[in-house]
Every structure is written in C-alpha cells, then in structure tokens.
Amino acid sequence: MTDKPLILVTNDDGITAPGIRTLIEVMTTIGDVFVVAPDSPQSGMGHAITLDAMLYAQNVNINSGPQQEFSCSGTPADCVKIAIRELLPRTPDLCVSGINHGSNSAINVIYSGTMSAAIEAGIEGIPAIGFSLLDYSWDANFEASKKHIKTIAKNVLKSGLPKGIVLNVNIPNVKSETIKGIRICRQAKSNWVESFDKRKNPQGKDYYWLSGKFVNLDGGEDTDEWALENNYISVVPVQFDLTAHQFIAELNTWNLK
Amino acid sequence: MTDKPLILVTNDDGITAPGIRTLIEVMTTIGDVFVVAPDSPQSGMGHAITLDAMLYAQNVNINSGPQQEFSCSGTPADCVKIAIRELLPRTPDLCVSGINHGSNSAINVIYSGTMSAAIEAGIEGIPAIGFSLLDYSWDANFEASKKHIKTIAKNVLKSGLPKGIVLNVNIPNVKSETIKGIRICRQAKSNWVESFDKRKNPQGKDYYWLSGKFVNLDGGEDTDEWALENNYISVVPVQFDLTAHQFIAELNTWNLK
Image (tube, rainbow over all chains, first blue to last red; front, side):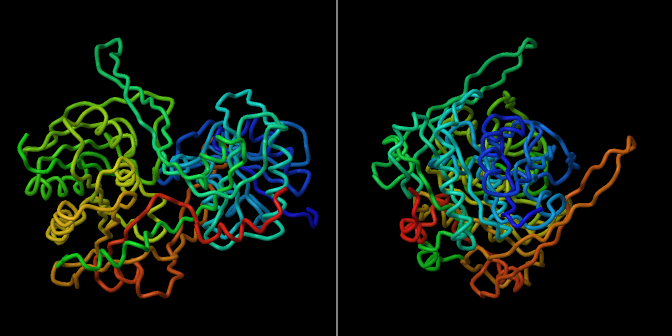
C-alpha cells in the first residue's frame, strides 16, 4: 500500500462486466484499487442484503493491473459491507460503483443495485459515487465516460461529501465531442408504465414477464432527465434520510387517537 | 365488489406469515381486500424487482374470509406491480404492507421489503402504509397492533397522502395498555455495526455470515427510535425523491470541467 487514496470499486452487473473493467482502469490512475463485486449480474436488486444465507468471497484475477479483486456471491450492498468489514486493509477513501450498463436516472435510483452499493458506502460514512451509462448493451462504449468519471472522482476525493449524501452520475450514450458538460440536477419525477406479458408454460400454468416503458412526466429543466436528453452528464446528490420533513406538521393535525 | 374501499395487502415475510394474516383480518373490517404477497420470505430484499426471470402468480386460499388472495413468486415490489397491472379489478384505494415481523425504523427503511412494497404503491400514486412490529419471531403477538393499524388506515383512506409520500409505521412490542399513543417522527440517524463470521465449508472453502447490532447514534426526541424506546408507535412520512436539494448549490461551486 502507498499513500495514494484507497478506492473500493463495485457494481451490480457482475465483476466481469465491461463497465466495471473501465471503472477499474480509470481508478487505478488515481488511487490504490480494491474491487469487491458480485460474481453474477444483480441488476434491479435495489438495496437487497443477504440475511439468511451465507456468502462466498474469493480473491480472483480477472485481468492484469495493480488492483486487488474479490468476487462475492452476494448483492451489491453485501459486497460493500464485506469489503469494509472483512476484506479491505482499512476504510476506503472513496467508493465508486458501476459503470452501470443502463440508466439509473429519475426513479430508477430506487431499483438500482449500482446506487444501493454507493448508498451502503455512504451509510458507513465513505464518500461514494454511482456511475451509469445510458446503454444497456454488454458491448457499450465507455470511452467518452472516462475523462468525466476521473474529474468527478478527483473532486470528491478533494472536497469530500457531507455525511448522508452520495452522488448519482448518469452519462448520455453519445460521442465524446457531443457531451456538452456536467449539470447538477434533481431527480426527475418520472415513472415506468409497466405491463405484464402473460404466457403459459409447457404444463399449462400461467406465468408473467414484466415489461414497460419509461415516461418522463417532469417538465423541469433542472432534472437529470432534461440534462441527459440534452447531452449533459447528470449529477444528482442523493440522500438516504427518507423522511418527508415537509409533511410532519400536517400529519400532526390528524386525529390518531 | 361493493362500494367499500379496495385495499391491496402485501408483505415481505410471505403470504402465510402471521403478520399478514393479522393485517388481512383488520383490513376486511374496513374494505374489500385483495392480497398479493410473496410465496416465500423476502426479508432484506429492499426494492429489488425481477427483471430477467418470469413470475408466477396464482389464486390461493390460505384461510377463510372475504378476501381474495394471490401468491406470487416475486419480490414485494413485484407483488405490487403485478397486483396493480394484472390482478386487481381496479386501482386500489389503499395499499398496506406487513405487519412485518421485526423493526423497519431508522435506516432499516432502506433494506426493508415491507417498505419497498409500500413505496412501489406510492410511486403508482396509491396511498400506502408499511406496518412493522418490533418482534422478529414467527409467533409474535400482533393483538395490541390491531386497533392502531385500523385507526391509521382509516385516517389515510379519509385524508389521502400527498403524491410522493408513504407512511412507515413501527409498533413497540409491548402490551396494549403500555402503548402510550402515536408519534409523528423523523427517521433516526442510526446504523448497523456489522461483522462477518468467517467459517470453512466441509471442502475447506471460506464462507461468511453477516451479523451485527443496531446502534442509535441520534439523541433527538423527534425520531422513530426515541418514540419506540418510549413505548410510542412511530409514524414517519417517507419520500422517494432522494434528491439532497440542500447540497445542489454547493455542488454547483465545484470545478467539474
């Protein structure tokens, strides 16, 4: 170990995903990198943790580089917990999660394993960032992301983040020269409009596939959706105190005797 | 169907758990009840959803009563999605989740399958409440909860909830006469201090069990932890816009070029 910052890298697409390999490549240029990531894809896992099963975590060597790597059988949040409590030599200076293959803007932050890993680090008081590229494909092109990811990570290492806040960074899927810059945003009020595709299995029993399309219902120009549609990288500061403080006074007028 | 309110009941402990059976019993006294709940325990699932597997949902009859019941192979959030989109005759007037066997106070709201079901309903614009009793055992005594759950649910049916807000209700595990009343609270700043118990499997490979204890680091008397320690039922209004609005101005001063 050196006096360089210690950086924990994780994700939800699994340790072999091209997105995390790119993130490792960028992070090794600014710190000592420890990777603790799921051994299989965990998209849509939200903030799931493993309570009633045991976990495996083993030292692996996915590709060459100065990083140390561990593959873990748990969820993204499990990876961060076991990294901090068991596998890392000391508390990391930064935790980065991603680069996710696909968007985690707007309400997607709630379902995102990528962001739950960042939030888990935030709960432990570690500055943390989730990075996502708006391309769901396995062979997504992460080249244009690299420079911006490095800039944002270096800023967080320099300035820190307030206790209770992590960053949710989404990157439009466009060429480097088309990216207009970085915008600080709020989470758009957008929803999935979902449907279920009902089918019969070979034994005649009904089963369902979830499908849906994302609808932006928020006309604001200060949202992550607006930024991404206009070729900006969106940065949303995310908190995990979920209290709706503005509604407490009103609730106190209810008759709950 | 009648002109009574339509109430969706779900949980994360599974459709046969005593907690949900109690909640169904209470809700059938105030509305027409549809149950769509996981076919197996889903504690700690957070806001996980099933993206790359299919779901089963089948009509079941766990015990007698006027309710209709469906058992679903998915997560709590999946149950709410498939209930609303596929199984219910119309959009429900209320969604209640629980009664969870164990606390969902403070930071536990993040990991909670019970609360993720309520939040999923909230995302769809349905007034929603998660109920939890501070007793993790399967044979927990839910008797003292019934009266208060009915009061809170009737109030939500009467007054509604603002878009983007659901309620997180925790009930102390004490006798009815010891409960002092209901307090509107904020989420306490409390953490799990975790450790991993490292063992070897019969083949000599390391594995880990997560364990930990909950530590309340928040001295405020307006928190859910304070209320519960003092034998009050805690009601926290919970929002799913995670934006830390208060940090946007500061982030705009960073040099992210």
